[in-house]
Image (cartoon, rainbow, N blue to C red; front, side, top):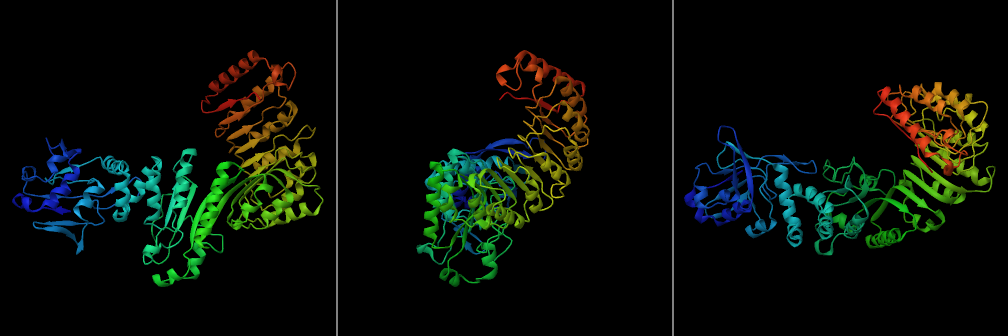
Length: 583
């Protein structure tokens, strides 16, 4: 609340005039409770001049609570880090015995008053977010003023200012904000990170305070956890729930050298021991080691930051993607691989992959493609299976172009029960492999199954049908593209498919199916209310020579698409999409 003296004392309080003049260039809507009480006023009516100020004898300006853009509650405040301000006729304002900022600094901040109860108590200003946006944009237009204001800016302004600065590409402001960030953690969260934003991320890393400043040893930077991962479920910062140690809901919980574990072992109560020992800080990133120039420049920055920190900085990577593993072995030495939760490796030897897996205990998702090894009976493959056996948290497994002919049982036996995703494309699976899969308890609750590009031209489809029945209560996504599945096989599978009530996506493209069987599929699958997307094969009658794409008769294909569209309309399934594609 800002309480002013009578208008006769206005001349003796120039500071108040400057404060009110902050809103002098605004036009704000005032909504009254009675007839004729809603109108538009300009900020000049609140500028503190004797003429405008004398309109009422009740001279009070109140700031009500509102929510900032980041979702945090903005309490009753003015653009200073204080709650309640009282004006005296001949002195500067004071708040609970504290001195306020110099009036010039107050003006330079250009932080508009956010919410008013007008000079007449029954009138209230609205459009809270609009005024906050206006204040933030005013700061962003003058970077030097914004940077100067950061040292004394209220904490509630940091999150909305950070979001606006990131979205607007204000590199210099972001760099300075990281240095004085008033919370323990900073998350990118749901902010969009594309190629133009890579420079912003690099600037944030460069200015991440990994050591106490020499000029302010008694005042340590508060930011301890910089999280550059994209996740829509993360807020920009976590609420402070502890006093003596930093807390973050999304910090690393696996490594022995994580802040969570170190702070639990060492409770530094005063600041003196904190200066004597390295103050642990964490940088959380998702890495894609693809050998590109951007990746190399980013790695050079990370290594230089590690050296600058003198051992206090930890790089935590929970999502690691590697293309051509042999070129990234040295890079992996800088990472604590025990933090990795999702691992994807494209092109690598099974021996190198096994060495990487030996350093991981908390893996939840594993994707390997184009893996080279000599024999499924050799020592390397046995070691690989041994490390898979330790992965008790594994929920997703993808082995692509990983020859497992006749040995799928050995892989499934070491996987933990309750697997959710299983992808085995281009694995040359045999009839024996499918028979074991039908009996395996490890894959009894799958949500996603991809068996594409495995020949399934057998006379007996009962094992696969049995497995689909077992999956029926959980399976949501099924892919069996390029499987040489004909009409006979489909007719066997249809009863099992109709029992998959949770199925949302079905892909069975590039299989030799006739038009009558495709019509049968549509009639049987449209009753599945949760099934929304189906990718179907082009019927064989559309080809001059199946499966050569160049021999497709486009006119016949158009008639097929039209017929399916009519069938979906008759079945009242406007929410269902049936598509095919030309390769």
